[in-house]
Image (cartoon, rainbow, N blue to C red; front, top):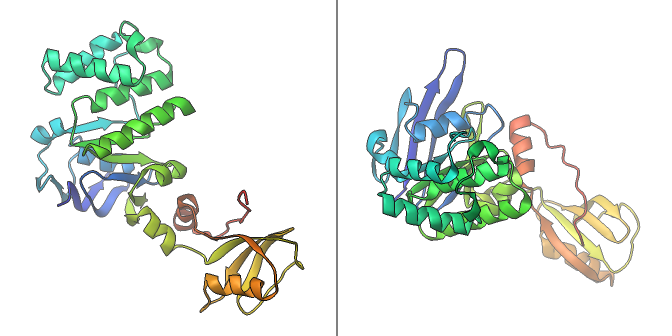
Length: 310
């Protein structure tokens, strides 16, 4: 049973359709990527899922029942892109205040704050004020406040913004661990490379509409261009073609080829082996989510294929 199901959600403003008939579902324990360019409708969608906005049409089902914002919000953790921290408040006091708002007792809140502050290397921050923190430090605090009450659904809107690589990896590890422990996570971003690394499944939103959704690997397979990357034991004549493939790019003994219809990767290998040419590397090239995103949102297939480290 899905932990969250959106059915034909619509949210209209005076001059635009912010969310226009969007439906998808998320399974328990999944890391789900909500993708789209700026202005696509992602934030409006998240605000409906958290009860900040009410949909004009459509339904939200949470944990098998119709979503009840007043009661269900206690089981949701939301980290918005716009930070909601009190600048003059000490960090320890702020974490305690917000944990109590989530229904934790003072002893429970203190134990969980200490646990998370230690995990994210924040023990010395207790008496600092938010206004004294860097953007990255504020981001870590916001993450802790979002997850410390152990919500069933965690929504992270651009969680790596402002983080250096070390702290980004630290947060990433916590996201994986929370999912393994049973939390469901919605990860909203326009950074495609992060999505490929983290998410099991995605939905791509553009101009308020869902463009596609599904498992990351299934989507990459769906949009593949039948390209293969090859490294040979020696250089061959430039622009080699055959009934099996056409050459897309070539540099020395490295080639990118497109297989012809009705042929397989084994046919490419056989072509070179029949000529006593040793194939040192052979692999299919699948499009990245960023390439698929550009193709669907901007309507272009213009992707320059370059060689990987082969």
